[in-house]
Length: 371
Ligand SMILES: NC(=O)c1ccc[n+]([C@@H]2O[C@H](COP(=O)([O-])OP(=O)(O)OC[C@H]3O[C@@H](n4cnc5c(N)ncnc54)[C@H](O)[C@@H]3O)[C@@H](O)[C@H]2O)c1
Ligand SMILES: O=C(O)C(=O)C[C@@H](O)[C@H](O)[C@H](O)COP(=O)(O)O
Ligand SMILES: [Zn+2]
Image (cartoon, rainbow, N blue to C red; front, side, top):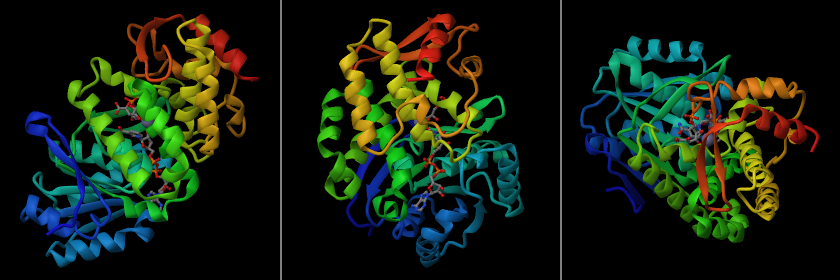
């Protein structure tokens, strides 16, 4: 019998699933999976860091429940979201003769979740997926909602599919082995939920930031509230034809920066989102939509969390303003060649703006490059 955990249900009809949030779920995964997916075989996809820190716990639990999982261990980092690693993952799943009804278990951060999720979506035209997120970012964002992807030299997440998991097991104790820089990167996506449409949550985060970084009850609450927020957007608009795009706050800038830094640890996704969210607020203020004091307040909060907030914080060269705008032009929200941005009227009041003028964006970015 699994110990106590919090459950967020994602009601998506025949694709509905639970997100279990607890402290011993990795050790109980065998019992939980045996109960929900009787007789399924399991292919675990993970990376070398997570394999060292957390895989033994999962293997012990699965073996105790009679599973004999296959392990696929990839190199860590954003560059793993590539054609080469996708091929390697799919071929390993096929080599192990895993069937359509068997489980791909993604054990790791968002990189592993996105890559393994995409592999699950295309292997045998769709295998079952279980997300076991081990980074803060993956527990509050990437393991929920079914976006899966790899990167292209043309841009971030440009090749992918919507493929919902059948179950998410978010075990907070796995975060004990995550380093502080990675934790802060995940915190940027937590702040995002407050900034989009929940100012109360945003103010609560400002008050409880140190406690959340320290662990304990505030951290658990931040994870649960984030999952509930993400689930709400996903249920309302599963394939992003409307308001789900709000979850992209800061990402139009962020994805361009990730491309220009070569999908490397020069700039982590959450760090890019931190810079992107501040830019989105500053741009909104410049266009007269939002009060400029909000930008300072948010920037202060993110800096206290150890996050970068400006283009000048990105280490090394990111090219000129034309290169930045060119990268932004590959964003998936582009419609008939025109740019879409998530803008804001202030904290908790984000909105979607289509047909944003390119010259205005260029002028703004040119200023930001020296600020
Ligand atoms: N699908 C979505 O909805 C969605 C949402 C947000 C982000 N993303 C994607 O997620 C990715 C970023 O995810 P991330 O920040 O988790 O990065 P990541 O997967 O690279 O993980 C961060 C680092 O921490 C290590 N790590 C993870 N868990 C650990 C643990 N418990 N102990 C020790 N080390 C651990 C990993 O090996 C890696 O080096 C990006 O590619 C981003 O585009 C996807
Ligand atoms: O789930 C979503 O929708 C999001 O936008 C969440 C983002 O945090 C995440 O980075 C996502 O992968 C970005 O999606 P994309 O469609 O812009 O690639
Ligand atoms: Zn993101």
